[in-house]
Amino acid sequence: MEPPPATPYIGGMDDETRAAFARIDRWFELSQEQFISFRDEVRGGLGELRGEVGELRGAVDALGSRMDRLEQRVDALGSRMDRLEQRVDALSGTVDALGGRMDRLELEMRERFISVDDQLRAARASDALLLERLAEVRDQSARQGERLDRVETGIADMNMRVDSLADDMRQRFRLVNERLGSAA
Image (cartoon, rainbow, N blue to C red; front, side):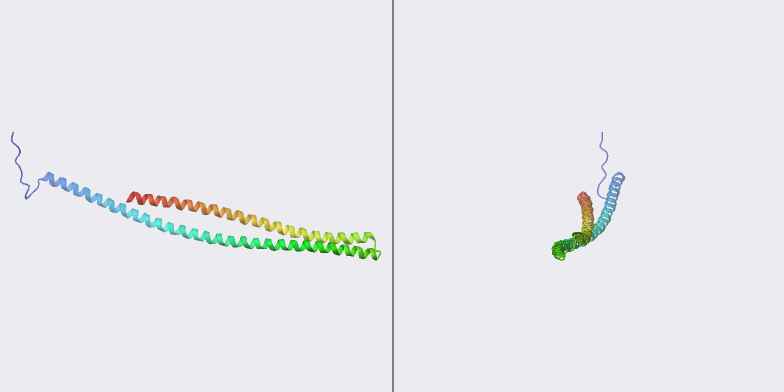
């Protein structure tokens, strides 16, 4: 058998070769269009992520300032508690002083021949007044303690929310890094 006649390569290609090159060219054009589209999507997603990260940073900064204000309030409550304790100590001193006065009054009344019943009634009235004042101070101290407990609970809840937000941010950064790593 005789080989098919060779067509000269110079000056032209046969139709089948041209069609094959045209298909290859079209495939490269489609691949390039798909790549450009994917690249634009990744850039858009990256821009959105940057915006979200900026928003998260703003939220974290706001939470930080709220935490600072809460710490200031806790410090203020602590100083109020210290003042209340000082007042209780002062009242205890007053009670002791009144006890001394009662002792002196008792002695003075004995010297003046006042009846024991009258002395006891006066002492009981004074004791009752002191006990009422002491009960008021204790109630104030208990209310301040409850407020402090609520503030501490609020701070613990805020810490949990900040930790949750931090976990979300870490997860988003991991996703961004994974996307960037797979895109590269």
